[in-house]
Structures are given as structure tokens and as C-alpha cells.
Image (cartoon, rainbow, N blue to C red; front, side, top):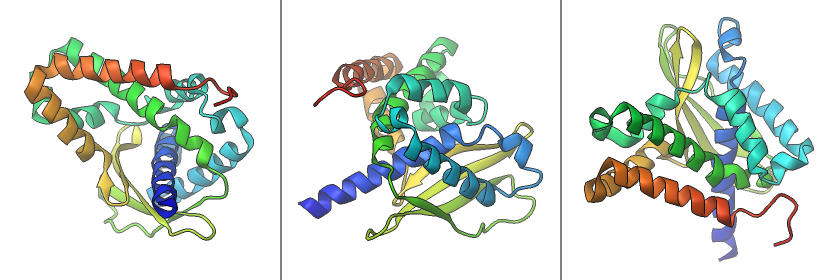
Length: 223
């Protein structure tokens, strides 16, 4: 049981860190892409992020306000969140109205931030090792593969799907231990949409976010 719990924490930590890298680390991506490959960039950014997490108590505590502020300041310009949400919704995205698309993106963003902000508190002595990129020079979509390592623990697979746009490289999917985030949400979302439609999915996400917010302890509160 203890091994299973440790494995679950490691996986959650990896996903939280992976999201954090994609959320906070790519603010300088457009500027750096000309001189730095995607894999070198992720390695550098992950190292900087881990050091920040080690010294920033409010981030480690899962302070939702601070994490949300980071998302608003760093993510939206540098992650293709529209593509991420559309891929998760699948074929139903084409049926959604502009208002529904806006609400879906807002609720998905809140879900990701609230679900994984707690994982930031688990980052202590991890390091990220990025593997050599297997891609041609002209490829505009690549998979950057890496491992999250900690002393005495098995490495955790952590990969990124990244696309090159006129505005720079942008992440649109994340893989932890062989499970792609978008694919996981797509199966969950499809079940909800088939049962109650797009509005049903939006309402379900909103309800889940409200529940997560209510259950989230305040930073520094005693549990």
C-alpha cells in the first residue's frame, strides 16, 4: 500500500510539475526559439522552475490565488490552450457555440490549475532530464521526452507535445507515464456529452471546480 501511495504521489507530482513547466516556463519561448532547441529550452526552464518552487513557500503550499496568477500571466500567451481544449472535447467542439467554447476553455483551465496546484507542494529534490530530440530540422510539431528523477525513486516519464507557430513554440499536450492528458479528458468528456450535451459537460466541470475550491484548504491552514 505504501509503495502504491508513493507511486501515486510521484505521478501527481510529475503532472503538476509538467503543467507548471508548461504554465510558467514558456514566457520566453518565442524569444528563445531561434537560439535554443525545444528540448534544451525545457531542460533550462524546468531547472529554473524547480529552484523557484524550492524557495517559494506559497507556490509549494498550493496557494490557488498565486498559481492562478501565474497561469494568467504566463500561460495563455504561450500555450495553445484552445487546441488543448478542442482536442479534449473532440468532434463535439465543432458543434459548440462561441459562448460554449469560451466557457469550456475557462472551466478546463480552472480544472487543471485547481487539480494540480497541490502537486507543487510535493516538489522537493526532483530534477528533470530531457532526452535528445528525435525530429527533423524543419518539423513544426515535436515530442520532447523527459524523465523526472528523485534520489531513491524510479524515474517518472514526462513528455510534451509542442508545436512551432509564428508566435513561438507552444505546448498542446502532456504525457505522464504513457498517459496523454488530452486523451484522458477526451474519453471523460465524451461520456458526459453523450449523456447530457455540451451544456451538461460545462455544468459538470463548473460543479467540479466549485467542489474543488470548497475542499481546497487555505494556504497555511491546519488540516
